[in-house]
Each structure stands twice: as structure tokens, then as C-alpha cells.
Length: 281
Image (cartoon, rainbow, N blue to C red; front, side):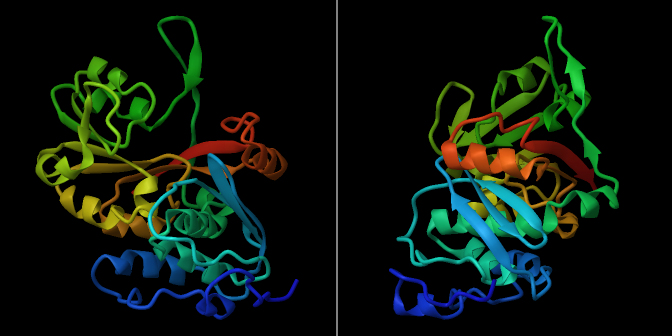
């Protein structure tokens, strides 16, 4: 499939290269995005993609990557068909202030970085089942892996992950930073400037890459153990140079089930379509 430059319905700029003027710096907050984008080799074509209701995927010659579908921000600019574009170019969308476009950009990055062959060679470990006191089983996740490090510690969860109260059960002095506060554990996310610098352990949702808060949040956690969690996490080891201690993300285990789950907003996503794994610094 060749390059497709006719992007119907976009602005004039959309018919040319995907670009966001003023974002090419190799210092400051854009440096992180540019380093990740430049890590993708040239010559890898995008074959398919879908901006789904809950999750999105980008499929390229290198494999499939996914991301949580974020909404809001600026108006969407690149509305035409991006199939056939260079994966490296599509990853430029990660820098868009339209969060739907940025979702596709992060999925494009994971179409290169979140591939099992690359991560296995770096010592990736996959989530294992753990027996719970009530007799049920669930996958061992990044929170369980740090349970013995939480007692009496200041722990920050950026994003309201499922069942945050279990961290309190582990003895954590927990703060959940959330844009849309849901319960008594939640604090509005602008409090990050006040709370994260004093934390011992910080868990970040991968969506912070989409909404552009990741560079600042990582800087605030310079003195904490930092774990990035969730399928949207960019599984790039170069993030360890940015202060990340663990990447707890995913790889696509079954592309067909992933397509179905994304396109239909249904189907078993975790455990079948995706495999959760972690990589330590």
C-alpha cells in the first residue's frame, strides 16, 4: 500500500505531512515526545487504525499498538484516511492538542514499542494470577507488585484506577489525583504540584502521555519511585532515562480480538486481546 496524501475533510495542512509547528524542540516538554517519535525507523507503513469508543488501535507493518481513547481538547485536524502513511509520521499525532488525534499518536508509538519480541529481549515479565482472600483469582498487577512497599508511605495514584482502596489496605497514605473526582479518595489533579514532590511512590496512568501532563508529572516525581500503569503506557525503555522505574503496560496478544473489542466496544479485552506485562529499569 502506498502513501495516501489525499486527506479529505481536513485543513490545507492535512494534505501534506502531519506536523505541529513549534513542537520540534529537543529540550523542554516536547523533547520526550520527539525522542520517542524519532525512535521509530522510517519505512514502516500504517495498515489500519480505529478510533474506538473506549480504546483505539493502530496496526502497522511492525505490529499493533493500542491506547485508551481520550476525548476533548482542540478540534480534530487530520480527519482523512491515514492508512499508508509512515508510522513515524502518524506518531506525530501524539503531540496534537486534540486528544482524539493524540490517542492515535500514542497507539502508533505502541505499534512500534509495545511488541513482544522487543520487550521479551529486555526481560519483560507478564502478569501472573494471584489468589485473593475471598477465593477468587486475579492477575498480579503493578499495584500488587508494590504492596509490600506501601505501608506507612505517601503513595500517589494519578488517575482513578479500579479499586484504589486496596492500596489503603496495604497501609498506604494514599492520594488519588483525578480530573473528575469520584469519591473521598480523589483530589483534583492540579494538586499534583503540591502532593507529588513529597511522595514516596507514584503510579501514573498512560493517559498522561495523551493529555501532555506526563513530562511535568515525571519531573515532580524526581525523588519518588515512579510506575507508569495501563495499556496506554508507551513501552519504550528510553523512559527510564526520564525517571520512570517501571513500565507496566500491554502488548496485543490477539489482533483479531483486539479489532473486535475496539470496533464494537465489546468483547473480552484484558487477558484475551491483550497481555499485560511490566519492564523494570
